[in-house]
Length: 283
Ligand SMILES: CC(C)(COP(=O)(O)OP(=O)(O)OC[C@H]1O[C@@H](n2cnc3c(N)ncnc32)[C@H](O)[C@@H]1OP(=O)(O)O)[C@@H](O)C(=O)NCCC(=O)NCCS
Image (cartoon, rainbow, N blue to C red; front, side, top):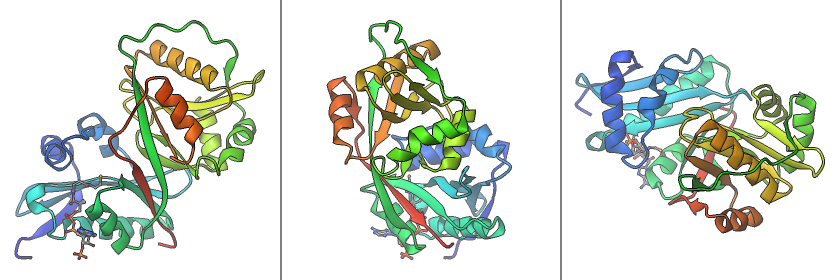
């Protein structure tokens, strides 16, 4: 390639150009303006940008998750600069970051139809490990919900593990908020209990994990639910209304057919595409 490419950490002054790159690369998926500061201030994982001949043409984020794995996200290349090796340079940087932090597992997700993104990940040894489907409910115009009795926040880390871990297989290993796929591990249960994301009704045995990784004002994410579906959804609706959010989002494995039937029956609309989780181990 004749043009010189340079990767560097993002800085505050990159905001406008990063938002522009996103608007061109993923016009229907735009959130970087809202998480820019969060990404920039992450001391553990770099938010990187690529320049070619001095112009910012791409960005990508390396995020360390609670289980010690890395989550590769927000990889965006300006359309005119796609296919020139920019994405590959980001992956090299991700692998360098993983090596320096002794991280041995990395993951990313992509639209099931995104052959380039999937192929790029495969080129670096990633393999598809799971598939998820998203559904969301627009809360505007929804009637308010009467008090659902019984749900309490689970504060005990052990209790959170006991409630969530038995469902690892049914949820095919991951639970999702803001399209961030968290490996369902005992450590995650501990983290989410500490963050107040796990609730149970001890009378009927219903459990729900909900919240947001970021942009809590945009949507409430149901990452996991089990038990009486009417009951946990009523609780989620009430939480959403308390928080003043306009949307409830849920991602679940398509194999969890009961979940899909229930959500669609309640007016949830399916996302336009399924998402796949790609994973590289022994990095
Ligand atoms: C996906 C994206 C990040 C890739 O970046 P890029 O700079 O275009 O990719 P590169 O030129 O570095 O690498 C291309 C590699 O992808 C793979 N690839 C490209 N097209 C492919 C296809 N149709 N099928 C399979 N693999 C493909 C190949 O491995 C190729 O490398 P190779 O030709 O040396 O084998 C970029 O195209 C982009 O921003 N797309 C829009 C946003 C997006 O989809 N982001 C990612 C997930 S949300």
